[in-house]
Image 1 (cartoon, rainbow over the protein chains, first blue to last red):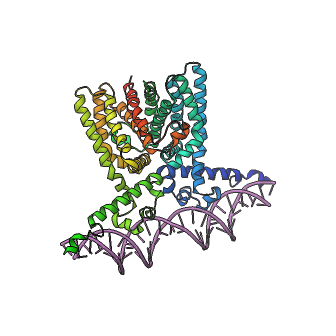
Image 2: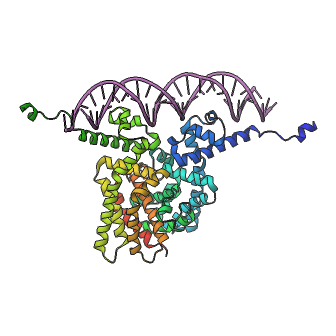
Image 3: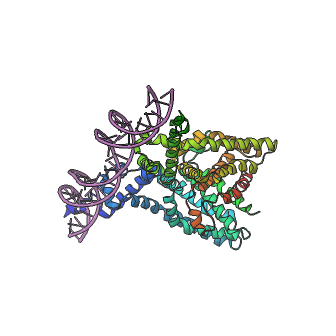
Length: 223
Length: 223
DNA sequence: ATTATCTATAGATCTATAGATAATGC
DNA sequence: ATTATCTATAGATCTATAGATAATGC
């Protein structure tokens, strides 16, 4: 009896073990996919990075594509949820006169803050998103997970720009998301191009500029 | 004697044959890489699309990566050369007072025109570039082939914006290239998001807006 | 005599499954 | 009893090379 009560469980409980294995697999896949893309990563690469046998990946995920989609889905809800809240908060506080810049701060800065404050793993997710955003398979995942929050942004922009055509606003958004994805990609190109003046990892520098820069672009549309 | 002069050569001359095979292989690879990326395409896929035996690809290219780099290099010089000329022409005509919008028209519209007027193959190249622009391997190819023309653009922007910091100008360029790459990618996302109001293939619509939009962003930097 | 293309093949993965083993759960 | 992990393996590719064949070149 005393043995049972003094001994701690030698191993984690199964639920914990499952959760931990899943998280490790997703973390490893997130990193590897962000660097080499869906087809540049093998299931074995993922297993080796975690330190488990390759067939364990199939125990948790039907196939490579499900793993890929799970990597995307795991954090997409967080990113989209936070931005949705920020937009709603901004709408409430701006009342009848929302501004383009205000809406873009809510949309862009909130997401950049997620990565800035989230450590290496969130930065890997950012690169992962950017990498797939310019691909056909990736774009449909964006449709699925981000349409709601993007259409929310569009609706606020429309109220802020009542004289701008819907088409202009959609193209403006298209420019905004391109700039954001180029940031999340962190390829190191801006570092080399600028001779070290700018850094791919410096999301604070982007946050300081992007909303205002893009807002000024929107304000001149259709003039 | 008369036979020899009247008979056309049954097959192309070797030089022509070589040039034609190379072009067909590069076209096929360009299309396939634009859709599925470096690792999503096999040498056999390329050969099948051309209609030749898979080993012929190795006859012309050392390995898959050389083929990939050759696809990039084939048109990078054209794109970069045209924009360099356009920037020099603009500088000459603008004299002492170049504008941000003028420089961006030269840089962006010239490239969009290349794809607009170039048919399907050039559009495939555009998607290929966009797809790899957000990857580490792709970014170094951009360094190699596009640094010169981008630094030329930066130099004109500096003259147009003497009171704006170099860092601000580099970040502005970072936003511009993100928006351009998102355009070249043609994932169809803007079509679906806008309910058919905008079209990924409509580079004219982008050309109508992008230079002015980005120029307005630059003008507000550092205020 | 040289170049373009194809045949055959070695060697290395890679995905995915079936089934065994080793843990935890009750 | 159930779940987590590993062993063994089938079957399918994929890359890259060596060497044969079929064209063109002079």
